[in-house]
Length: 266
Image 1 (tube, rainbow, N blue to C red):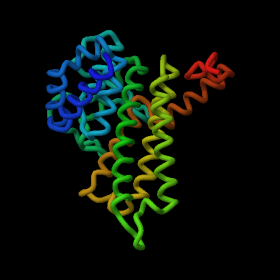
Image 2: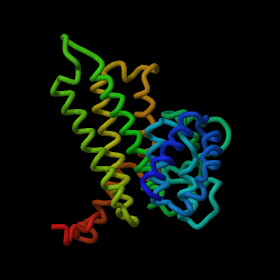
Image 3: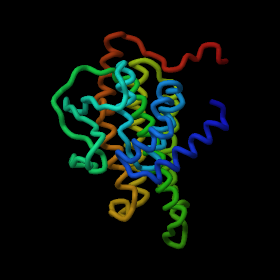
């Protein structure tokens, strides 16, 4: 897929996500666009693009099931139990109304009994891209706010403290994207999901500070992205759990793995 084709696909996906009903409606629309075929034939293009746009648009679909099912060698289109932070297991439902899960009622997650082990690497990379898109959506909202609003006769964007917070969020997101782009295998995917989760949570904290009280209101979109980031961070291992797992791996192997081979780059 060349650059022009990718741009056309991104435009079609963004339009579909912003005009389709979240959940089953978007699942159906993505299927009509050829999501199963894209996942089978060009996963390295389809997964980052679809999941990043899910985050940027604030919508949701059950496509994580498809990514994990394909990695397990099973037919796509169904569901399966997925590990969640704290030793819990959940299912991402494909039909019916969103399930009340306490934090993000827009996600149809429901508690289930523990299931069999599933391959996690592909799902963690996909969730990393979703968290990245969610972080970028929050940063865009905060940036627009500090540009538009004034205090003491000056735009909020002119205050150094706010500039530093948003710059730190931007750097965290850029680093997470680079990590996701380089991730391969189980360890690389673990580190990439941890980096994306940490970047999204850092961005949520700084953007909330930039927006102040308005960021807590139901009328503003920020709180929905914050809740989405918190829930997605826990799926297939939270940032805290994955960081501890990476630390245990480091102690066990007594060496640091490199995500990118820099040899010969000088």
